Image 1 (tube, rainbow, N blue to C red):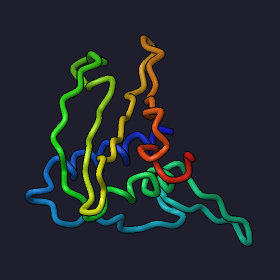
Image 2 (cartoon, rainbow, N blue to C red; image 1 turned 90 degrees about the horizontal axis):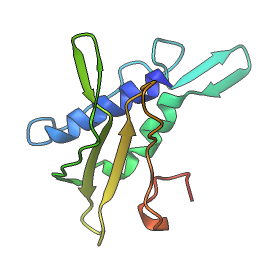
Image 3 (tube, one colour; image 1 turned 180 degrees about the vertical axis):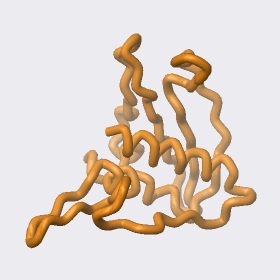
Image 4 (cartoon, rainbow, N blue to C red; image 1 turned 45 degrees about the vertical axis):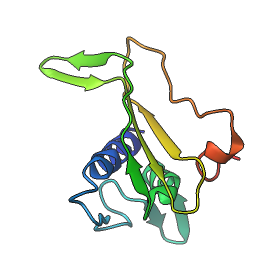
Amino acid sequence: MRDAILAAMNLNIFARHADRVRMANIAQMINVLQAMILTDKEKMVLTPTYYVFKMYVPFQDATFIPVAFSAGTYTHGDISLPRVDAIAARTRTQSSGWRSPISTPTSQSKSRPVWPASRRSRPPGRR
């Protein structure tokens, strides 16, 4: 789960800097740290990182829409992170935008990402 949260947070950072970041790739995909796919002989498993990348497919070639969202912060020592991170984007053919909330893990909060009730706004695979 940690790898999935890290991948989503990085993709959100790239989206926020879409004016400068034109493309982002994953360098190695199979049997490495934060792999998308793990194999062992004839067995294969798709990791949480794979599903994060699949969830972000609608953001490819989309227009970034600035959003503001505050759910407090999670602090551990000197590090402080938002409890929920979110981005939004709109494709050329879309009448409504895609949203991607991410919960930062915390032992103090039971908050989880919540997808809107609308079927069109859910990520792929969550229909």
